[in-house]
Image 1: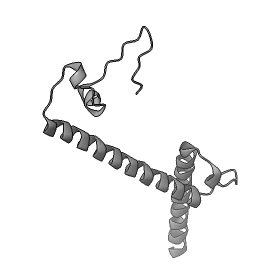
Image 2 (image 1 turned 45 degrees about the vertical axis):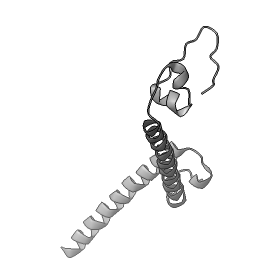
Image 3 (image 1 turned 180 degrees about the horizontal axis):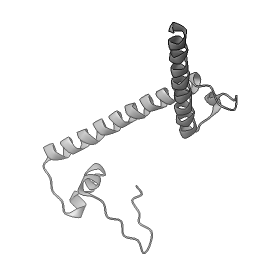
Image 4 (image 1 turned 180 degrees about the vertical axis):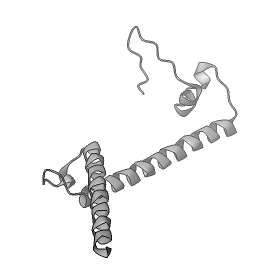
Length: 112
C-alpha cells in the first residue's frame, strides 16, 4: 500500500497493517516487542503458506489441462483460463461416468 494518500481520501489501516509497516508508534499505538514479533511472524507464515497453496493449485490446474481432452479438439495446455479447464474437466468426468454406466448395462445384458 502506498504511503501517500490522494487528496480528499482517507485511508484507514488496521493495527496489524500499521505494525507490519512499522508505523504503529507514529499512530500512537504501543505494543511490546514480543507482540510485534509474533504478528510479523504470523504474517510471514501466512504469506509462505498462501504462496504454497497457490503453487499447488496451479500445479493441479496444469495437470488437469494435460489430462482432459478439449471439446473443440484444441489442447487446454495453451489456455490460461482456469475456469475453462475446470469446466472441461467436469464435462469429461460426466462423460466418463456415462460410459461406465453404459458398460455396466452391457455387462448385465450379456449375463442374461
